[in-house]
Length: 320
Image 1 (cartoon, rainbow, N blue to C red):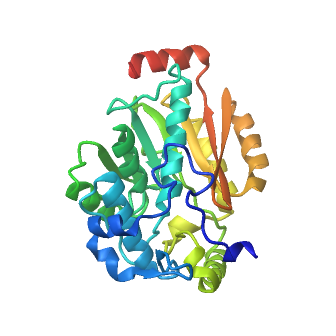
Image 2: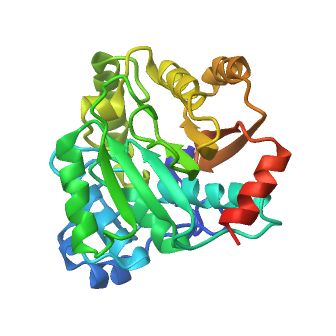
């Protein structure tokens, strides 16, 4: 029997052990938490409850239900045509970052508002700060070049009484990533980013067409994919590799203001150029964390300009 016709497993393979989304969705519980989801829940070909993952509105409602049920949010929404991220994958990034910090803290995950995270490209969905604050109590600064996206994210923050934990900043320099948003003498324990994947609008549109075609064939079996997305969320001239290379260069201009700089890397073929760029700016430690959600594989590349002495000093001063 072809893989696409097999009944889904009871537990999703590859997700982080602390990820709350390892089990299949309990739609009865999700509907109870978010009644707006109910009209979108239908039996699939295995007579299990599911949603039509080719329907952007259904995917958005599923996200809302997941965030309300698992992360105690009272409100979450995104404007039409903005990126609707898969929650399990976003949660994985946060949990692996927690493990990264624990490596420099005698195996203990540092928690609470003393941990400050910089989210580059927070987007209208604000998902990373929402999950990271709920799971570990961290504080976040989220940046974006899209004022409308930040307006949406700010409404989510305000409606959930998270203004003390999540701050948003507009990046007014269109060529800036870290430049201009990290204030003088400001310190971050980690920076995260889900960079634009495609190299052009045409490439992004072609990829979305292929996704939609695949979903139309096997919609009931597919995990939630990213629907919508503004140009700044989906593509950058030169693609993922060019964006991350610029990110690495700009991180070298604030080498001691962030313990760990990190980014998702979707394309394995980009790793060679990324490692080359990291070597060029003289980072002192690099870690690559492999992630998987079903058949989708990605990785997090992490780098620091702190030597062992400074790493120990940082953790003992800030995390104790």
